[in-house]
Length: 602
Image 1 (cartoon, rainbow, N blue to C red):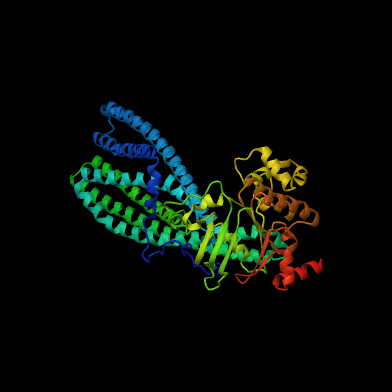
Image 2: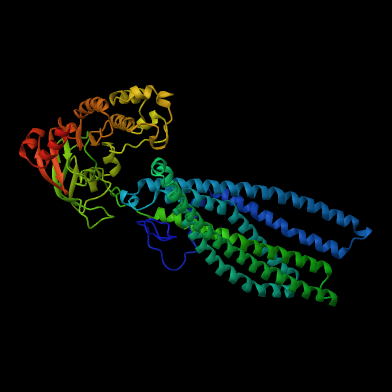
């Protein structure tokens, strides 16, 4: 079953991300080093605690050897007592250092992942609109949550366990050589046979883990879309279809995870057999040496314990290697996002926009096509100018390019050719953030967040006081319905404002724009969702608001543009008519036909 609706295969890089090479990159976790470097003191303390815990473990076999060699006679009782006293102290050091290691490493993992999540989200918020034309929201959420959790597990546990067992392996191997060089040759000779399968299977595990994570991200993306449109889903009675499709996606994710787990299981089985099989062989050879008097029983016991430590450390490494490989795949997916460069960004030395702002906008022979449809030209040589304080209306059929003009003014995209300026400054020369701070937008599809009414209005100006929020709501004629809500301005709205009517959401969006108090006002069908009474009230508020600033209005309902100073009629990306309502109505062109259809129907 093919699940991804956009045709992207598993592991396909994000739009704008560097193309991956065929060779599997086994080192993406290295890019976490700068994050660890921010907390180098905590990382160093954790490393010290880890080494202390491992070294105290390596002390135990020495005491065991001496007890075996000296025997358990009454004469050796005092010696045995002293050794056990030392072992109690060793155990205490081991317990304290292990606890410190766990605390420091776990909190370090939490801290690094928190920073990484914040950085990825901040980077996402700065990416250009073209990125989100193809990227799936659910997949981005999956990378921010599931993938960062996988990294937290690795950094907070797996890496710590791996380092601890690496120290045990190295320390145990060194002490084996000190204890019996001859027996050590048998063990060391088996290491290449053990390590090579680990490396090979580790790569396979990482590939399968990446596939599982990508499949789960696709399933999460689809689920997010369905839950966000649950009413539409139920209205069309497509619950069964959606359930089957999601179940199929989840099954795909399960099969991918099962494949990764199977590879890890095979890796673990092979590693453990090779490791402990070599110990059995060495133990048999050592028993022959004890019988011949080449070594003492205590020294053989010491050697066996060190071999167990070394083998156990290597065996544990084989198990956590799979987890680290999974985290490596997750890190690769996250850094794919961080590697995407925004197409729209501030120049190295941006030109300052004039202050105070006037809100003048000019288009000069602008041609534009959306990146996802480069062959379809939306604007074709468009030229016009809006003077400071002017009220300009954009009218035309759907798909004529009116909303695209707003996108270009906000510099969500750059034109293929031509020039766009704001207050005389070409947009590519200005800082996009500085430009957008001077613009207030009321979109056709009003966005309401799952927070309080006041916070939604304050989105237009985060520093606004409660009184300013209330005045903006009153100006947008939203205060009446807000005061009827259970907690007034502190009422929590559902996700996307689902508990409000379309007209109420639109009035909150208008209040947000009023609060922004920007010199340029962009109204995209700002009254499209209002009933006749609300439209009249809001239109009065907008008329008063537009008198104080430059305004560009998009409207299909021509009654909303009668008060504008000038009307541009757009068709197929070009200006086909220009004038006032009275002039255009008498010309007999496209505007006259649209006006006749609307006003006669009314």
